[in-house]
Structures are given as C-alpha cells and as structure tokens.
Image (cartoon, rainbow, N blue to C red; front, side):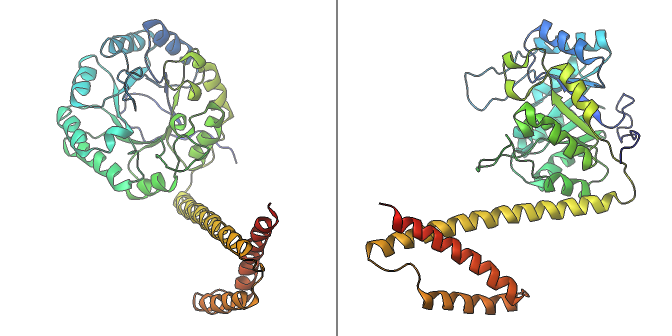
Length: 361
C-alpha cells in the first residue's frame, strides 16, 4: 500500500530531506549555461542536491575528461541562485582540496576510486578535520568488505556524515544493465551497517533511460533512502553518458510515478527475504549457464555419433545416469520423483539437440 513519505536518516546534512533524497544534475558540467539551466529546471522538482561531474575518470584517453576547476565556480553559482546544495566527485586528494576551496557542500567518491585503498586513504587524509558529508559509491567489483573499508577510512579521520551509493557492478557477462545491480551486496552492507544512509544511482546501473523508473522503484521497495539520477537539458547531445540521462522535467515525472511503501518493524524481514531471493536468482543463472554448457557437450556427442554411424539413444548409458543420480539425490534429500523428472527433462533436451545434429546436412 502507498503511504505518506517518511523522514530520512540524513540528520545534520543541511537540508530538510524527505524520502527519497533526490540528487540530480548532469553527468558532466559542460558549460556555465548548461549547468545553470539544468539547476533552474530542477528547482521545481523534489531535487535537494545538485550534482555535476567536474573531473571525469574515463575508461580510455581522448574522451571528455571534465572541465576541471572552472566548473566549481559554476556549482557555486548554482547554490547562490537556486539554494540547492551541490556535490561533485573527487578522485584524488587535490580534487578534494579544490572542492573544499570552492565551497562544495557534499563530496562523492566514485567506484573506480573506492576500489583503491591507497587513493581512499589520501582523500581521507586531505579531509582530516573537515566536517563535510561524503557519499561513497560501491567499488566496481562486488566486494562489500572493500566498500566498508573505504567508509571506515573516512570515519577514522573524523568524517561523521557518510552515505553509501549503490551504482551497480562491472560484469563480464552480457546483461540488460550497464552495471549489474547485484542487490544482495547493498542489502548486505545495510545489514552490517544499518546506520548508513543508502542511496541508489539508477543512471549508472541502467545505462539506458528506459530502465530508470524500474530500478528506482526497486530501490524504493528495498527501502533505500535516496536516488542519484543524471539529468541534462538536452540529454541526446550530452558530452558524456547521453543514453542514461533525462531532462529535469522527465525526472519530475519519474519521481511522481514512484510508489513509496510503508516501512515498519518488519523491514529487516524484507531485507533478509530479498537477500535470499537475490541468491536464488544468482544460483538460477548459474544453473542456466551449466545447462547451456551441458547441451554444448551433448551437441558434441551428437556430432561424434553422426560421424561414426551410431544411434542417438544408448539405453545402457541412460540407465546408468538415472540410477547414479537417484542415489545421489536421495543422499541430498531430494525425492525420487523430482530427480526422475529433472533428468528426464535434461535427457530429452539432449536427445533433441543430438537429433538436430543428425538431421543437419
């Protein structure tokens, strides 16, 4: 059921935030005009914090790597004109010094930086004794300990206001997302550190604007505290990450479509349930991959039988398989009916695969 918007755990962050906290703005600050236009158009939405990348850590050289320090002046103008708080990414200690000098309200540390404890420590040392909120994105690889370690390094130098940002994880396999969400990782982080506000970055998870609402709703259903969404006055012509950006007006529409459900004492149950479901999804994907590999082997067997003039069905081999795995299944607590149905289905698909090989000219 839909409920009233609840308060968020961003006490002392400098704004009267309601759930979700909304951080929005362009992937990259491109021009003074583009930054100010975006901020002006975001002002009527529920955006509380304006974001823009000043330094852009790009995968390959010769890509747009940000406007640098002059962009910090534009962020200062945004705050003066609109009253929105500002945030930008810092990837090293010098970035942190510059952002502090220009009065940026909140810093964020990107996924490529979080993965490097040496760089995190240098940034932490640069912020020692400074009372500023910091958002820490997950490392590019799915490692909750590395994520927590980065947060702890900041806490050890006195940073008290820290939020974790879930932006998805790199994956070698093809998925519908730019970065695999692996929801079980932020859920585990929240279990270990329930004191940390948790923000979702649907833009970097999705990589495409048509998935933003789906991912944002998922984050709200998992009781995330905020969203960081990239917005641009002319997304298709953005200098970086054009496909995942939306206009400020489209952001307003997206936020209006979100269903914010109640949070109650049973929320821990929901986190545990979702963690288990994520684990089921992971295992099911592994199961599908294993079955795919098995059918490739079956195709090889079919080719071997074809070349040697051997029939597809080998009854003795099938009897051997079913007898073996009935015994194994019993030891593992599976019913005989389940094992028979499972291996009969696999066997039939293998026969179908080999039949196709036999019939191919």
